Length: 236
Image (cartoon, rainbow, N blue to C red):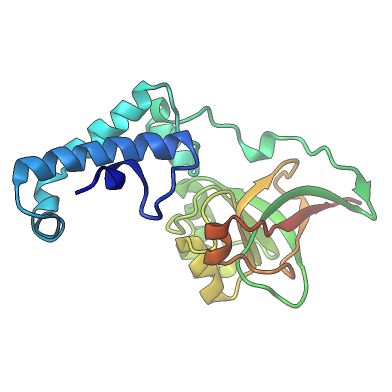
């Protein structure tokens, strides 16, 4: 197999970020070593031997090599930082950040996100941060308040799945429109912004999401096309 395979990604281009380069380099090295040791060809390795040779322990070593460089992962779920703080950057809650935009016509721009589905009109409601399973259990037992716009860290969708249908809208800090939560929100018909960056929102604030914005597609991500939908805080 040519050296080009080991030095480039599947599109034949160099990686765009250091973390991608670190991971790809380490994994290519691991696969190369295992393939040479196992013998046979690439197809036999992928479809027959890979699960036995590329073990969890091996992948943990790859992760350890990345962390040894001093790199720390961004947090997409609060539980990750709580359980393995040595792997993640310090957790800075979105609800602790301040908004800096001016207030115009009773609205203050407080963030942007990737719109999952385009709706005919914007949606507004009351912000509620949901970080933990304990908070989900409380809402499950006592009910989700009307007009709730859930502000969520985790793009997986598993955390809030039991109460998802009761949200008026969702703002998620991670993932993409193709993440589990994005798919679930689309199927439930719940307006949703993924990969959001917000500041200045507190529990109980009235916020508005620009879900009339064009929905971001998989092709947009691949081509680096910027499509963002605004999040405003309603003031007064």
